[in-house]
Amino acid sequence: MKMNFKVNAVAKVYAKEKCDNLDEKRLVPKMMLRRRLTRSAKMMIYLSNQCHFGDGPVVYGSAYGEMQATADIVGAIASDQPISPTAFQNSVYNTAASYFSLLYGNRHEILTISSGNDTSSNVLQTAALQAMSMNKEVLLVCTEALNIPNINEVNTCTDYLEAGVALTITPTDEIPNITIEKNDHAGFAPSLWDMLDVVDACEGQGDPVIALEL
Amino acid sequence: MVEIETLKSQLIALFQLEGVNAADLSDEAALFHEGLGLDSVDAIELTIFLDNEYEIVFDNMADSETAFVSIKKLVEYINEHGVL
Figure (cartoon, one colour):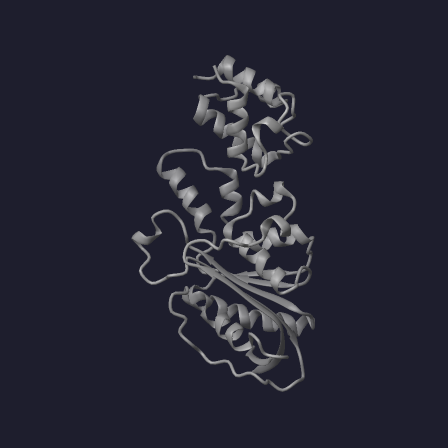
């Protein structure tokens, strides 16, 4: 079954190595919180700000999760060193979404999804269900932060080692005015492709309305 | 002997205290709550750092409570108990 959704805002950010201007000093003025943020958390906060969203339900996705924190833990184990509690805290999949909630005091429901190349497709579907069931605006965010030391020893297909995509949707009775086509987004992690399809189609459009599969 | 300015620089790097310079930190500055504003996760991070850097392992809570009072107390503890 398909339902219709108004796309209120879209945003994306990407870089071959590191996204330089995520505006974290302005967006996260408290240094004691900012110092702990992971790259994905910084991207998520930046993207949510671009979408003018700070309070409400969130569906967050990442296929690879917190790569740097995970690498730090694995490195510590391999060299028989104690594991950093900060790396441990930052290694879970919902790290980015949790820092977002801490920053804004957001107490709404957050769902985190990781399902390989289907991640952003499943984020879209889950967020559609959330928006329908709560009748609220929902923030969807997917990020991948793959820029860890030596990543190019195993990476052969992802040019943009940091990339994130976001949009906000609300249910509507209006007829869709945008058709979403599946495209290959060469250089981006495939886990982002389905949301990139939506963002690219809606970017610069007046009041985009799309149909999403529930 | 570890100089207090060296330790301040190490703490700034360890805790990623962005925008803070060693000269900004008072010798008497508390490590936790007011002062540097570190928290319980930082306490574990600091314990690991002291073990790795100075081979200091606390045998009891009282020792760590004494050492963690301020930057000055910590440098004194390192110079007394650490492998330098």
